Structures are given as C-alpha cells and as structure tokens.
Amino acid sequence: MRILGIDPGTGIVGFGVIEKTGSKLHMIDAGVIRTDSRLNDSERLKIIYDELSGIIEENKPEVMAVEKLFFAQNVTTAMSVSQARGVILLCGEQNKLPVFEYTPLQIKQAITGYGKAEKSQIQEMVKVILKLKEIPKPDDCADALACAITQANSSNIA
Image 1 (cartoon, rainbow, N blue to C red):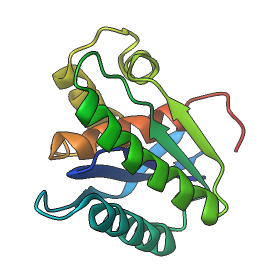
Image 2 (tube, helix red, strand yellow; image 1 turned 180 degrees about the vertical axis):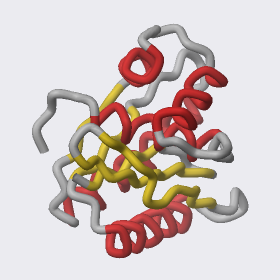
Image 3 (cartoon, rainbow, N blue to C red; image 1 turned 30 degrees about the vertical axis):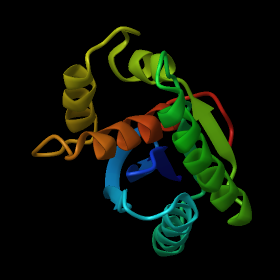
Image 4 (cartoon, rainbow, N blue to C red; image 1 turned 45 degrees about the vertical axis):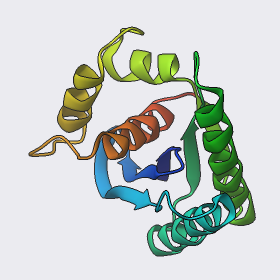
C-alpha cells in the first residue's frame, strides 16, 4: 500500500510518500511545497493545490494521512493553516483518496510510544523506521513521513 503523509502549512507543506509491503516500510518520495509569503492567500492556496495534485499524480498513493491542527495561541496562523488544510483535503477527495487525520499526540505515540516526545525523537525514529541514512529535512518533511508511518501502522482500513 502506498501512503501519502501531509504536514499542512501555508508557507511550507511537508509531504512524504511511503510504501508498505507486509510489515516493511520504505520511503518513495518526500519533500516540501513552498509558497512565497508576498503572494495573496488565494495564490498560495492554488500553488499548494497544483503541486500536491502533481505529487499525487506522480506517486499514485492509495491513501492520504494528514496531521490535524493543534494551536494554543496564534489565531492568525491557525486560520491560514486551516485554509491550506482545506485545500489539501479537497485535493485528496478530488483524487478519490481515502483521507485519515491524526493529531500530533497520536503521531508521537505511534512513532515513539510516548505522546510527549520531542521533535528530535520523532525525526530520529522516522530515520530508523524507514532505514534512512539521514533525518529528512526540513522538519516539515520528517513530520509528513511520521504521519504516513502512523497511517501505515494504524488499524484504519483504506
């Protein structure tokens, strides 16, 4: 099964595509979609949609896993990222992908077994689980791969 993990954002959207064969996982593709902060929101959202559509077309995932938002304070950032998440969810739906969502706590527990794990611990475990030589950079890319791994190891049926 091929899984696309997404770490939503407006300036940077992390993505990671993994393949699950039996109990083995390996990375197919990973990276980020960047948008220029000088563009208006609608232009940035179109870039995210267009680039994500291309990633889906190229990698042909069977399911999409998206990190849920968790913001304690910054409402402006939360609104902007919420718009990006909406575009990401729409893109998954239009490509007929089952979409699953995971909170940061669920991802941390799935990757490290500890819900309060540090970002560095998550990144190191992504490297170990996928047998990579280096931790994927930037952080958004590693976070997207962690989301995909969470889906791969969940009981959700795609």
